[in-house]
Amino acid sequence: MKTQTTNKKIITRIISLFIFLSTSFTTALYASGGANDYAETEYPIVLVHGFLGFNTMLGVIDYWYKVPATLEAEGGDVHVALVSPTNSPELRGEQLITQIEDILAITGASKVNLMGHSHGSTTSRYVASVRPDIVASVTGISGVNNGVEFADAIAAGNQQLLASVVPLLADVIAFMSGNDNPNDAAAALVSMNTETMDAFNIAHPGGTIANDACGEGDYVHNGIRYYSWSGNSRQTLHLTNAIDLADLLFAVTGMEYNRKNDGLVASCTSHLGKVIRDDFYFNHLDSTNGLLGLTSILAHDPVEVIMDHANRLKGEGL
Image 1 (tube, rainbow, N blue to C red):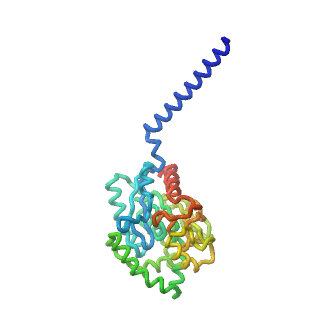
Image 2 (image 1 turned 180 degrees about the vertical axis):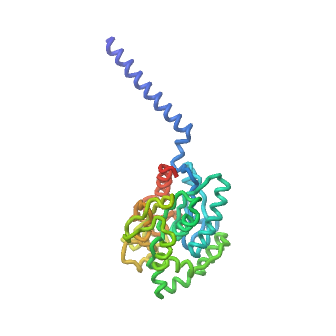
């Protein structure tokens, strides 16, 4: 009986010690902010929209739906850039530099982490190339980094109907989003064709692919880290959600491709630096959780993908 009592006391003490240590760890974790610091990067995150992009349209439709709020809830310092809906990456990049300088002045940070979607990838790459002192990392999300077949088709005289609609659409988007930056649809479309992108990559080589059209580029160039990911919705004709109107557009534009793509960008075309994945079940807008998050129920959550990447940047000391 005495032995049983002694064993019970030992077990009780062990359990009490476990509870004490667990409680102390949890308390310390919360005290240090660890419970909500998953996305707390060293440098602010700047989200850069793509072709025909915006911040918020009519105060209802967010380009980065739920992304900034979710990152901020987990400790991120997030800023959403607003550049021309359509223009060259160089001109959009100069607009972005001005906004980054404002962000650095407000936050006291020395650099930023750029996450650029689509045309926002080349816009971000331009900034990293000409102002490496203010950029810690560049992440291309479904980026137009190595030429886009749809832009090639327009350059060849095809898809002129859709191309003729772009200037009007750009002006409508600018008006509804309160964006007074200048539009130049022709410059934007030319900047995405393969010939122009080849020249751009020579001028701004950070993270670009060398000698392998579907490989990886340098993970670090000029002190800046490069990453990318993209989707592939070709297997379902880009129909990822029954009520996503963008699916209809990508079903048309996707006809220009004979390789896996998201309806506007071929998976290999998106490669930049370290490739996280190029086969997420996303159409081109799904990768930003755009159009009110109308993604497939079978797809990864794009907000979580971006959240995990913020944590990756944190782990790299960025």
